[in-house]
Length: 633
Image (cartoon, rainbow, N blue to C red; front, top):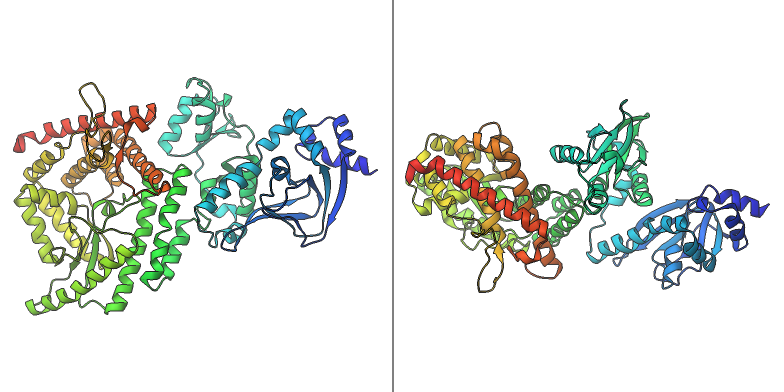
């Protein structure tokens, strides 16, 4: 009776369900049964390896890892039909995790030699465990996360308390299953999504096509883009109910080795959930870092929090986030950090004697920060009523800005080499002075004035009274209206920064010095796109400062940008991502991040793409020359 019960039980448990009746009978001779009272530690992390594969008949266990700081991270909860102990059994060196009985638990215990024979003889059995989450999730993902000392804040609590429906993306992108791979990829590119749900003629989901499928099933296999997407889509659509907690979704993703789940509500498709969505809930979430920033009362408390930002960026890079989205996340957190420093400064030094607005410019102003961000900031304060009042205000802000400058250095923001900082009295001025600055630069466009315009015209407010910054922006747009001569001088400066492509389309690199055989991807790649789009934006009086936000608005307002918008967006995203990945790799090696890339370190595809991006810069600079040439050349 026990043998029959055992066989009947395993017939419904993967991967044993793939075994023949005869194999299951042979297996039963090597099986025993064990009982573990609630609270029993069955396997201990870094302890002796398991000599058995245990299959839970009744009860449940918790699989978790103990971190170096004494906290426990839950990997999984397993119940009837689930197994544990295979990885340490096969590895034979140690147990990878703690396994604790969370209720009275009965397990079928199968001997090591029997399991190893099954691994050797049964392809289906082997494939199941090779694809299981054990080696992928515990040994790789969590080891990597531990080594990087990522945050484990309150994220795991959110996993147990947040329904999937609150997190899932509601706008599911769908298409007919009979389209081609190329058509599917085009839709995903246009919609900027990582997955496409395929449906039949009645609109019923029949499969899913993901970025991962493009890499693993199309590009790596050399399939034709004209082939039907139904030939490569994943047909085993894994669903989860909108009322289930996110932890259940995480378990399904781990168990089935997938990155997307369809979310249903009352049997109807409600949305889609990705592993990225769940990652953003964890302690690594920018939200948790932002909350930690808000809770700090001192600069010494803020400094270690600031150090966690780069680790989040690294995780987002590995998860395949777009460069522009990563930059937006960095910007949001750094803005919060800066505001908190300014709030603490006001408490330390007393309230400011007049309304002021702290503005930032450069990459900060454009929301395009990467790992290393110099201080680029200034102060606009309300116009004083007298010279005496202005002197008193200036004395306050001299101490205030020096305190903030030093605090930013403590939090990892280096000083600006050119001293474009609020602590420089030249850049801490009343509104009327700032308007005079801008007027002088526009109406007397010397090379120095144009250079300052390229820097300061990307300003945006971060703290204080934003009406001061808005007033300055209104004045700037009014001054620029019809000032094509000034824009011509700016265009003349922009086209002098030619991309590093030789006569025979080879990439030009430094011939000597510290960066021999390298090129500056920021100066020669990022900057030309930023400068060209800024030029068009100033011409049209846009208030946006982000390059991609400017492109999005200019599509409907500028004929040149409208024609090349998609190419500009894709090229800029690619160069930004290339720069971020380069800097992240340097930081992983303990090096100071820079902008110098050796083209020989790039793949053939990357070199081809960067050449196309440089060719686009050349084409756009030619168009700019023709457009503005009559004005100053």
